[in-house]
Amino acid sequence: MSDIDPDFDTAFAAEFDRLLTWRRDVRRFRPDPLPPGAIAELVARAKLAPSVGNSQPWRFVHVREPARRQEVRAEFERCNKAALAGYDGERAKAYAELKLAGFDIAPEQLAVFCDDGEAKGHGLGRATMPETLRHSVVCAVHTLWLAARVRGIGVGWVSIVEPDEVARILDVPLPWSLVAYLCVGYPERADDVPELERAGWQARDTDASYFIER
Image (tube, rainbow, N blue to C red; front, side):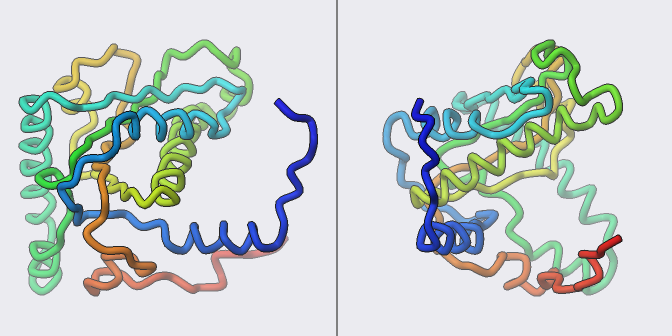
């Protein structure tokens, strides 16, 4: 490991800003397989994320068995049906038309858990804000997302599932709790505008009041 500051220049900063702009939650994938070892490479990059007390509580499950995938998909369908029932009128119609998951086409699926019993870090930073353990896992997910995008790979976060049910389906240890279920593959198209914005569901917020000074 070098102790020389890499001195990221303005050109790199501009490219990084462009990466942030083009990172999208992908729901429409091509069926093309990823290169061998691609998922392991993305997980390795995700593990470079920051974590409270250096606890590194992220746990990754590469979901490959067709039967387990089908169970997770059925769980999504159940939860999606219940979510649709919570909308009325035009909003219900709009919800029903949304593409909310890439289960059928994305070649890879990855479940990301938080090990709530992780002892590494010796509790540093968690006594006052225990939720930072899961926040650390979210940082890992976002790091993976950026690492995927820079390689031309898309990631879609499926949140319309019951976490405990997914944990049961994947038969993970009890201290683990689901943070993210990801579909991973090459996107059908690249776009710097979120799909939900393109579909008219929710525009990007530019409200300046979200940034205040005290």
